[in-house]
Amino acid sequence: MQFAEAILHYDFLQHALLAGLLGGLAAGIVGTWVVVRRTSSIAGAVAHCVLAGLGLARWLQEVHGISWADPMLGATAAALVAAALIARASHNQSEREDTVIAAIWAVGMAIGLLFIASTPGYTEDLMSYLFGNILLVRTADLWMMALLDVAVLAIAVSLHGEIQALCFDEAFARMRGLPVGRLSLLLHTVTALAVVLLVSIVGIVLVIALLTLPAAVAGRFANTLGRTMVLAVILSVFFTTVGLGMSYTYDLPAGATTIVLAGVVYLGVRVFWRGR
Amino acid sequence: MTTTTPVIDVQGVSFAFGPVEPVLRDVSFAVERGDFASIIGPNGGGKTTLVKLILGLLSPQSGRIRVFGQSPEKARPRIGAMPQHAVTDAHFPIRVIDVVLMGCLRPGRNLGPFSSADHDAASEAIVRVGIEGLEHHAYSTLSGGQRQRVLLARAIAPKPELLLLDEPEAGLDRKVEQDFFDLLEELNQESTVVLVSHDLGFVASFVRTVICVHGTVDVHPTSHLDGSVINTLYGGDVHMVHHDRHL
Image 1 (cartoon, rainbow over the protein chains, first blue to last red):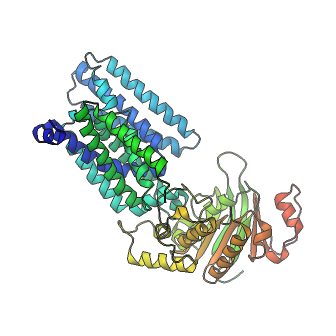
Image 2 (image 1 turned 90 degrees about the vertical axis):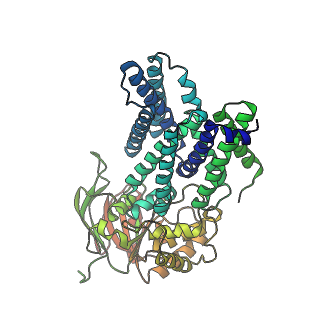
Image 3 (image 1 turned 135 degrees about the vertical axis):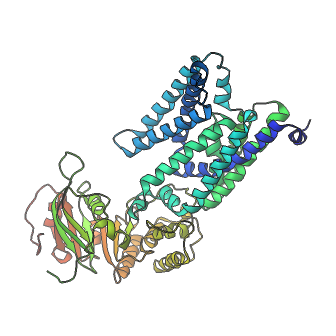
């Protein structure tokens, strides 16, 4: 059955397609902020800490019977804690920020692995956490993605000038009296939430690519931050949709197919497009 | 004493980053309205710290700073600032007009797009610094001299009464630097200009007052500058220098 035809027949493919659309919107906008602020390592660390939250929630559910400990809740909490820790470390300049990021990255991952090892029967989940499984996206996840999209769009429109100033020239933003600390925290928080939701599409290991590659390609063609975002959204949606189609057609893992596609386009643009 | 309120009034200010030797010790000086002053001194002498104190981004451990007779935080919207090393990511996707509009940002601004008044102010600033026609060019494609003008336009867009520039000439060649200072002299017709520089020899031909920062502060009218002032600043020897005000 062709991909286009299969979509009409299978709910899980429709969900997957919708997840790509909704996730792509957040990825394009948030990813543009991440790329121009050069905070992709922060996004990577937050993504790996998500495993600690997922593992903890699973462990509480399975071993201790605490049913409200939803993995999504755990993932969100872990991502926000990681983002707050990194924001604090970068504010307190006596710490080397990259060292703090590397530590949080690895320790978060390790905590997650320990919880998963202590939870009987759930080791097989590890693969879908790490590499994503867009075909397992639940209706509740789609609603959360839609909610995040609304929040991200509202922030991008209402605070565009402020965020642009923060990304372009933080010293100047401070001199104009903008609340630089609170704006940074807002961006860290939105990034953390986007990471959590994108993890369900491409997984912990690959999420950083879905955030950065579309925006990096877009930045080579667009001459404003707004146009970069629009183009990054289009590219994100293109990568997730075509990635899903290719994975269905050739029976490949969807997350990996999506990221390889994005990587090929990124490299192609770098090599063959001389830029403006 | 003059009857008008000085633009910048610094009285007995000391500042230290933590429990170490203070960067500034008991500093007092005033900048009068319409002045064209330069803050000079060796690296690490406290020039940028002084700028941050005037902008209210740092608070002194002792002493008092007033700008237009107000606290620095309150006066901040009346100051047009050009921070040091302002150029960030060389490939940042942004146009000249977007950079200049940043000057119109202020706390409490209405959310959303810039107002038409902000756009008018930005266009006016662009004409003022002589870069009209470049509005829609990508900032990343401009020359160093053009970029400095864009950043100056950004500083003057909100029509500040005080222009505070931190080493704006860094990285420019002499011809471009000369043109830039000519432009500052023009802007000095309307606003007080204070500029931080490490290049005393060059600024001396433009500015009227030199504020020497090396832990303490001396103020010299430019006409009184001589070798011994420079020696005091950059050499090890500290001697009393002849100048008419030792504040």
